[in-house]
Image (cartoon, rainbow, N blue to C red):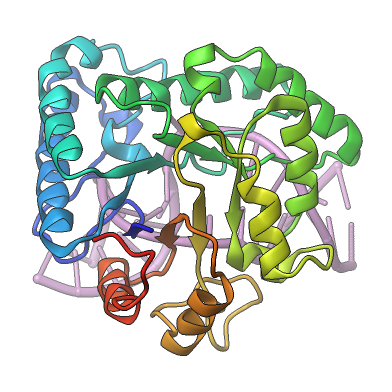
Length: 297
DNA sequence: TCTGGTCAAGGTGGT
DNA sequence: ACCACCTTGACCAGA
């Protein structure tokens, strides 16, 4: 079990997701921003290495407008060496890597244009991981998408569009249960028709489920990961006190986390802590989990 | 330097 | 048909 926090580090004096408005897009600025973001990603990798946080989710905003038609610079060639340099760092320290496209990336939309844009966005994510030289254990996690008034048809569209993706994208895609529309059982149904492993989200499952216990859910989801996919990935969070149901906690709830660690044995997985204060909670989690024999840090 | 409106992008659900 | 809301961090214009 490696532990990580998503995308951003609050204690560094740089940012990996610097951007600007589309109206201000200009090749020189784009090139400079990408260079700055990559430099900051290196700082983040060094920070995580030093602290034993070896599960890294790379921000989708690493390359501003990464999949947008207006991005016309050849960043893939321009930053090829820079990216493979980062890969050395990642491999030396045995990092586990993921990425998570945003809410607008929807493979199952009834709109052809939305699907086209989504495919391009998934290609972009795969480009980053490919250029980093990472194997198939580096994953891109996606939700099934919308319901569009007809969940069966929406699921079918997901399967068809998934199976039309390039192999280099398909091998990296894993599907995550959400907290409103598609529960673990739905994601499993998609797995059966696509072979895409299931990334189990503990918190979403606590909000939307069909009665599976944590144990059952971990058992069901882990079986969908093959050797080449690496250890299963699991997302963890807890409810924000006094927040709406489904809102992520601001800080790690240590009691809840200890309970999760105990209840999740003997299953092993890499754990992403989706908690607002990012590395602060991840570092606390490492301490809490210090005696857990599954932990790698 | 601060602040509030806005940002590439879609969809749900209440009225 | 319309509109508030989602979920979020950061940009940026105007004060």
